[in-house]
Amino acid sequence: MSNPDPTRRTFVTLTGAAGLAALAGCLGGGDAGDDDGMTDGMTDDGMTDDEMTTDEGMMEPEPTDPASAPRPTIDRFSEDAGTLMVRSDENGLPGPGEAIDFDQAPFITRGLGPSGEPVEYYNFDVQSTSPAPIYVLFREGEDSPVEGQLNVVDVVPGDDGYNDFWHVHRVTVPADYTANTITSAGTLMDGDYSIEETDTLVNCPIVPEGSTATKRGGDGDTGLVQGWYDGQVVHYFTFEEAPLTTMGGSVPLSPIFVTFNTNPGMDGGGPASGFVTETGSSQTHNVVATLPGDDGYSPLWQVAVYDNADFESVMDLESANAANILNSNAATVNCPIVSTGMMG
Image (tube, rainbow, N blue to C red; front, side, top):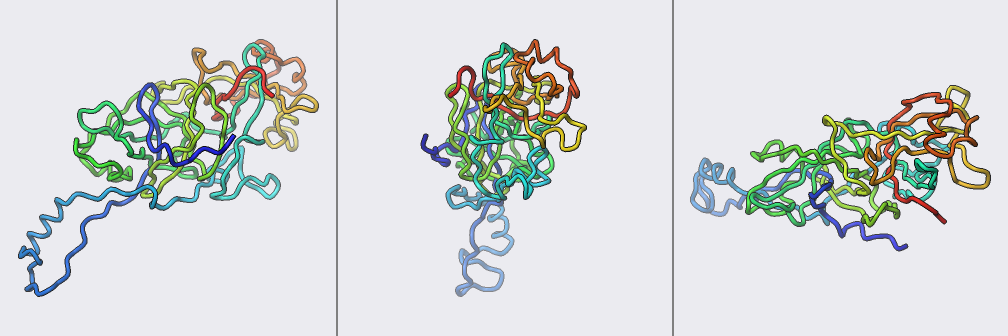
């Protein structure tokens, strides 16, 4: 499969699940004129300094072209950003700003569904149940987001409060608003805009530019989407295998049962030892409790760890629940399911 164009989608439609993006920076104003033959205290239009100041205060900021905006260095594997996936000399995880191929281990896992059917899911590490805000702009009187406007966020991986899960906020801008004039959350907060919290959540991990994750549940687009972050353009995936809504302002959870080559509590045990797999295969016996389309499905999984002595007997949700559970709430991880059934 060829790599998708990471710049072709610059906004996400707010339907059942809206989009995310990143924020941008300060907006420019007009340049001061040259002092050609002006008397002290006068402008080239004959205005006094006080008049010029008043007029400049009413000048509209200019839009920013995303193509020429800077890009921040995104690092999902720093000690500030990662929990289970923190870069070390031993694991060789991609460096800061390096594109990530999520279609290779350890970023993709084969597990089992509730009835024992094969499933495949990406691993985006531990995420909180507290979503971060994402701002989607709508012109006054319109029901679709401003065409060409990048969505706005105020955190990236490694920042306090970052989350792959975003709580959509609807921002109403004037009818004559020009796309990408607003490029930062700070500008939104300082402006006189109506900002409405919706109940919609979106799963949109921010990743380094050029990263790939070519699998999706259903017909989801696999390309990268651009967004604004503090005057800079960031890139993120969208996973829309199921609509998500907040539960009391939090990201809902669904259970997953996993087991490791070495049980937690033992030397080198837990995630560092890797999941147990069938001999000669990448197939784990990690069991998810729900699938996309099921009531209660969420890609934010509450991890229960079972004893690896029960690996052979665990083949579906019923047998997973019957296993010896070592920890019923080990972590909450973002693992969107991207395929079910037979896989090559």
